[in-house]
Image (tube, rainbow, N blue to C red; front, side, top):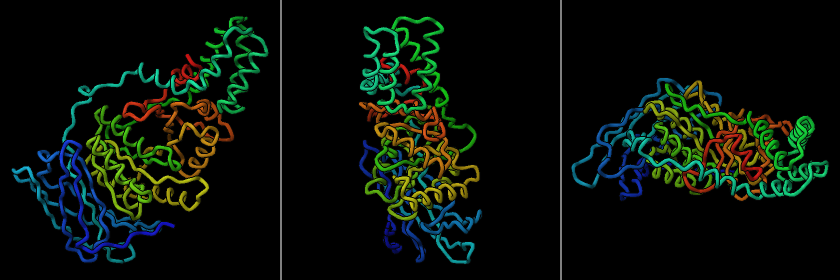
Amino acid sequence: MRTPEPTPTSSDATRKVHAGPAAAPVHIDLTEKAATAKKPVDAVWANSPDQAPAASAEPAGRVAAGNISDAASVPPDVATTTQQAQAPAAAKVSESAQLSDAAQTPDAVAATRQTAVAPEAPTTPAAAERPKSDRKSWLARLKDGLSRTGSNISSLFVGVKVDENLFEELETALIMADAGMEATESLLGKLRNKVKKERIEDAQTVKRALRDLLAEHLQPLQKPFDAGADQTRVVMIAGVNGAGKTTSIGKLAHHFQAQGHSVLLAAGDTFRAAAREQLIEWGARNNVAVIAQDGGDPAAVAFDAVNAGRARKASIVMVDTAGRLPTQLHLMEELKKIKRVIGKADGDAPHEILLVVDGNTGQNAISQIKAFDAALTLTGLVVTKLDGTAKGGTLAAVAAGSQGVRPVPVYWIGVGESLQDLQPFVAAEFAAALLGD
């Protein structure tokens, strides 16, 4: 059971602005006058001292942790908090602001609702000025990452006759790669027909035919991510423990900024030790704001982040969530609550619900996708850690609807730790890498 931290007194409410890696931390203390104030949701962003905010931040909707309930709607006219930040000409920045508010909840219980929202992050270099990853180099890493699968299959076509023995060995190799029975039978059935119809007798030609059929089989999973242009897109991200959710969010923030989008992050993982600090570090690396809170209700953090993102006209708000297993039913219910609360902040949100899947889990990924899809209705997948795995065929199982799973689109796949190692999924490229081409 998660034990919430005690509510601090007004003197305990100190928020910090974390500077980027090139500058020493800049601290801003916000003294709160409201004696009944709940624990505030911190706004953390990255900037250098000479870029310290000089103007007051725009107000945003606020909610104290634990004030969101499934039974009560959030009043649309919640009072706003304004924080005044003044930057002197000196290198050191010392700021203070007063926050006070008392808003009536629907059940007439007085509560203070407040959020510190970071000023607009300083303009970063244009996307065109940023170095773009070498696509060929990334494809080479993808092929290398899937080499265990690719070498097992590719070796079957060396110095062999095109006969039933080849198809039987292919069947074994695909199943061992976790392609699943449905995908394996479908692919080999089509391959047999093609070989017979076109009278193919060369093993390498059979391999190319299998590659084309696999790319066609995976094509339904290929879908470009719609970042939107005229509204703030809210992206909720879920997954099991250790799948790489927070790291993927950092990489996606880099990806979106490279395309010219403004990004806001929400540290909704209030349970795992150092999860908040990890996302703040990613925010510093990408120079984007992070709405965070040390402990408390993740739904409240998500609610504040959506309001802050809309007020700041951010292109994309990404909400991190704590890792959980599908068998932890109470934690799956918490995910449903986060989704509902996001919908209270924006009736159309979340616009995307992504599941981060560890590529090493093989067929276990199928059960994860099925469980999270049943709870949240997923819109896309992010498949991580495909480097050095023999389980690359799992996506073929997803495309085939193995074990009753819905073929959820795969937006991105990852093959490494660097910012450029998370790339959009392309069926033809993946099929070629999986077969060692």
